[in-house]
Amino acid sequence: MKVAFATEDGKHVDAHFGRCGCFSVFELDAEGYRWLTARSIADKADQIESDKIEKRVEAVKDCTLVFLCQIGPTAAAKVTRAGVMPLKVEEGTEILGQLARLQEMLKHKPPLWLAKAMRKPEEADAG
Image (cartoon, rainbow, N blue to C red; front, side, top):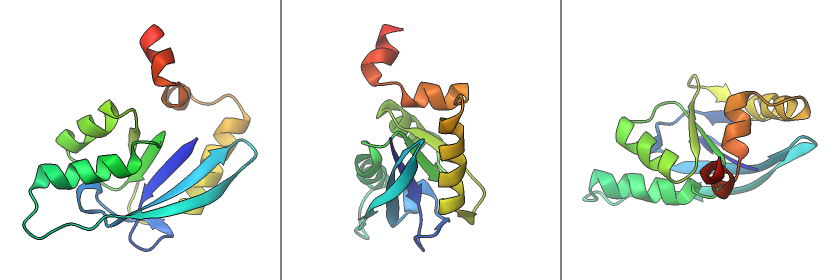
């Protein structure tokens, strides 16, 4: 599965979803993880807030999870509707540590929230 992290320094989850300038995206499974890309978000000074949110949703819509420090209710709803689970963590959480924890969860029986997030949309619709 793909996992995105709202980050400004590339090492820590340290950004609010709506103001994040970059998402670091990793591929993760029970065997390991690998960095895929950094998706930069360039906002225009006169851009309206809903467009800023849409750009960020577009950047993470192929991911299963997005880790962030904060997210507003409107953005959280849009992220969730795109099939991505937003997860708030403490600012400064290390990305590699979070990846290791997720990998451990996948090696054993994943918690219900993670199993649900990993279901494909057509599976979720069926049941």
